[in-house]
Length: 115
Image 1 (tube, helix red, strand yellow):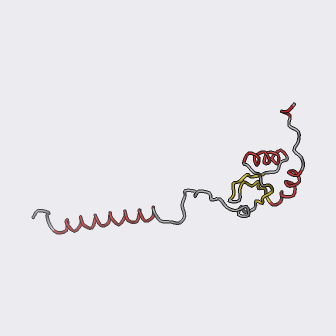
Image 2 (cartoon, helix red, strand yellow; image 1 turned 180 degrees about the vertical axis):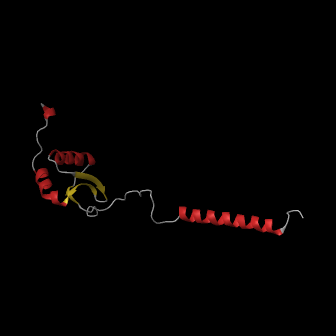
Image 3 (cartoon, one colour; image 1 turned 90 degrees about the vertical axis):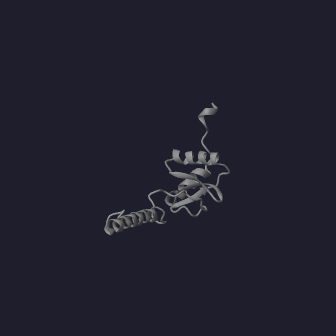
């Protein structure tokens, strides 16, 4: 006999099938959709799709929006500048909305750099 008795031949086939089964389970687990430890890319949404944030300003550019955000930050109001599907928006928490609108409605303070 070339391969010895029939049990070693059967054992080698079962070992190959077991290895194939383990690889199949690992690949299924790897490529399955569902919960992942890798964060998904953030997607753009409309201005009303940002949870607790509400829009308080609609700047024409991101630079103008950053200047407005810095004005709010100088008055200790946390704001977030986001790019929505409707364009750039300056967002604040709901409880800070009235104060933020008041601050942004007032004229900006004079800059020290002009002196």
